[in-house]
Length: 353
Image 1 (cartoon, one colour):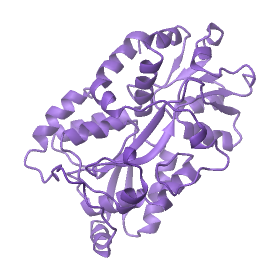
Image 2 (spheres, one colour):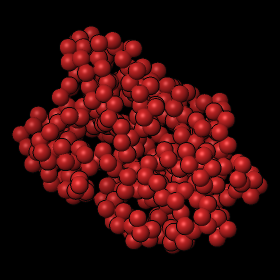
Image 3 (cartoon, one colour):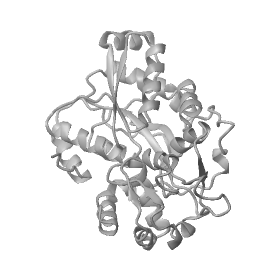
Image 4 (cartoon, one colour):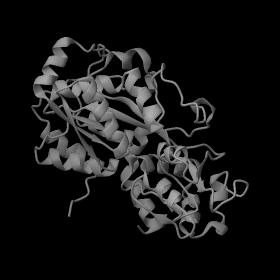
């Protein structure tokens, strides 16, 4: 059994693991933007591979990897996909044992990047397009990470099981006793998206709202990708959370699902990416990080994956609600980094799972 790694464990273990490592120091001056050069491409091709730890849906992750491999033949991307919290624990354990497999990491829990930065586990690398086209709120001031993706965690319903006029339009309506046994929900102990959403909702609605929800015989699943799929299968009529991009893709394919952006506001989740300080393939890692932040790659995330982007030149999909028109809740990665273990403990106390 894998022992759970808390943020406190990661900080302590990683500080020892990175002692003496060639970690780029954090300085007062802002980092210099880096262009993709012929020398970087040649060095990346000599390495020939990279390992990408991500929590994005596997189908999209594989498409992203394929697009990069087509752009830069000779460099293979190994997609290591799991829930963000599982990847977090895995990297913590690997570093405890001085195992360095991960080249580039992407998490749906931005707090993970905060913790890894504190522990000296990330390399400072600021791609040129991030410097030029990403708002300051979506890039680390020391160049350690940037928002590779943005998604939301809305409500949703099965259109065959719930009429549009009867579907809950708010979190307050979702906890009506009439929906007992009809709701599916993901778990913050597995999913970074749900961890972030849990922090925002507990802050804005209070834990009393979760207590009401827990009384409704909620189906608990792991990943944020699962509630939309359970919805489409008709296993539950409503979803309390889940990845917007997953339910949007199901809707686009004609599945009987619909999104609801709750009136109180929808949890907003950034998914930052970073190059690991001990990346075994540092040139390939930097090339992948730089490419993944380009307008081309960001538009792929939107058009193929139904994600949102911080890139100023990326365009919303015409069949999705405009990002700017959605009321969102405030993300606080630093708070999640400090309180995640307590949040999970409170959630466990309420839901008993």
